[in-house]
Length: 377
Ligand SMILES: Cc1cc2nc3c(=O)[nH]c(=O)nc-3n(C[C@H](O)[C@H](O)[C@H](O)COP(=O)(O)O)c2cc1C
Image (cartoon, rainbow, N blue to C red; front, side):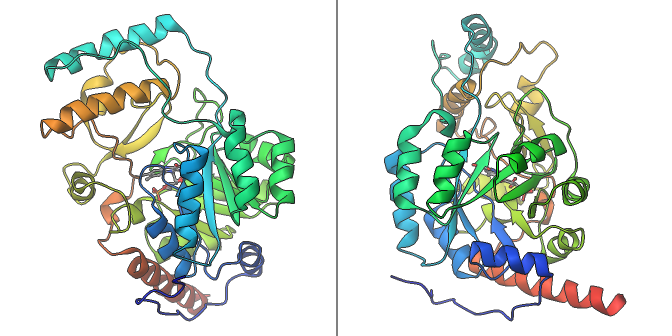
């Protein structure tokens, strides 16, 4: 087992606020930095590098079968003996409506035709929900990863109890105080406060209701009105940003976009290039790609698909299947304008470092920002 990679470089541990220290102890980690789980982008290598550097690595397993998720957990364990997080989606199983689905397929058909292809006749879901996925729950109870987190909602209370009884620490995303209260009432251990700046899917429980609260305001709100540890997420790119959310009362910060570019991620070369290209760095939220709102780099989804005549969206994640087929067709012709290149609103501050270097940089910056703040106060 390789617990200390070549680049292992222990950082001085800054003295964190007492509630951060308690939370770090609960997670079994050294620094208040969590890698955002990123389905399709995070890898065992990325998660392990973050955990080995003293943060909490994460695997985004929403699109994995129970066996694929088990394999990813085992691959991560081969690279680190430190704790890491496994993330799953908890959306309500969709009520499918054939007429709405057909209207969407008809609307998208010209985009396929323009590329010499044909729109699919029927759609299938891309991501599963832990809410109706007993094989994944059974696998988690066997594998017992240190941390499991939920997005788009939370599982049933008996599942929450079983996972906690197995010694797993549970986290869930909230985008509003109402969602945070549901999470707290369910006995979950910590809340990821996901601000509207965040890259990727909004964690809203109901896809049609989005309060769009910014990260800093959401942290203040949840720190004041809940008793759980708050992990800030959305638009955080450096140690100064992390220090700011800690100063607002968050126990930790979760960063996604900052890590997408790391060589350990699964991001394709065009994604990496566009993350650094000012022509694409304006980010937008659209629900047209998957059926749920998500923030990503400027693309044809925003400029061409999201027109006033766009029909009502059919169920998440059935239309994601169509989006993936359209991207597959286009990318074979060198056209990457239909890709889902998720990114947060502060992507222009991305730095091209590997995951270990980025962790070390974030920790050093956080340390400096803390020292500067103490000197000024
Ligand atoms: C490429 C990408 C994929 C993501 N996938 C997931 C996911 O599978 N599960 C999840 O809970 N959050 C996911 N998110 C959202 C992150 O958890 C987090 O809220 C976000 O990255 C924070 O904002 P930032 O990207 O500006 O750091 C994803 C974000 C990105 C950028």
